[in-house]
Image 1 (cartoon, rainbow, N blue to C red):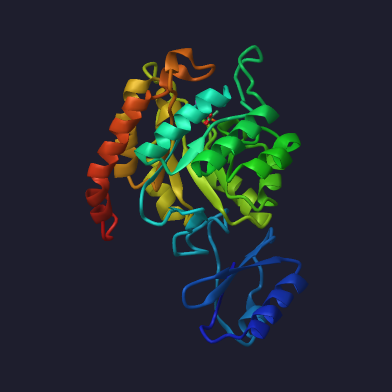
Image 2: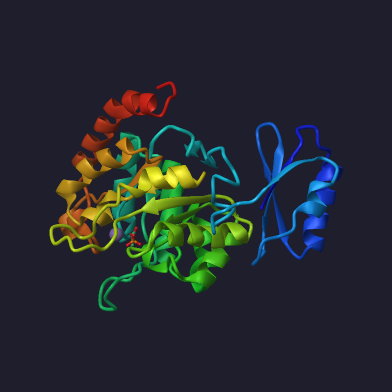
Length: 341
Ligand code: PEP
Ligand code: MN
């Protein structure tokens, strides 16, 4: 349920409506808008009788939200969510790029990569200190040492850092370092981790599980939002299909559908979908053309020697080519989205 307050409703009236919602055993989530405040209501397992709320002072209308996901839905919040991280606006209409290696491997690797990425115009640096690997025998990440390296590189380059929390036990450490905490694909259905991310003050980049439907993806985001964290971005990274020519299949289709159904920023990771570097630039173009707010790509200064995902990592010159192409696409993308370049 969504309660829309009148434009001239007072803070006291807002408080009384929230109090009434709590009396009904439900949870109010005030959502400030450009002209009026709305209150998202969650917690009901059955339809709620809206009459006691409709009659309260300051209430303009009460709308039933038909989707199973509530706080993530556009029904609840029609305007796009914009997440600010330093000087970067995520979802603000200007496509942006998160780039970096799959894993943090060493101080030298990260400093070299970050300096090049910054020069080419990357908005943020990615790199896993904790890695969720399919095999227990694969490189698992440098852990705390990796986080230290990320902090040092951020201090030197001023690039905000995106890094993954693979479980609740490392969340505190990751959130101390990360400007954005990543929840990896395999953890999209790790509900205790989603709840922990919901209690964080950091924005969360939630990757889609390779077998998740759109509804399951948005309900995973709902877990984070229902704990109080409104700063969630969704990332499509490829789903598992019968394709035998790529690592996963990039579900470009989900991009406009997510934008229609949710107000949250939508990112695309073409690297994990492709599994091979020569497909990453074409897929990145497609993602932006389909309306993604940004892309996340893996880049490594020496991909053939990377400790993880080298085959899909762009070289630094390839990354420069990608950035040049995005620059050329910018006016067309802006026109497609109905805004000034
Ligand atoms: C990653 O971004 O490094 C990663 C492990 O991705 P995913 O969770 O999508 O497999
Ligand atoms: Mn990777």
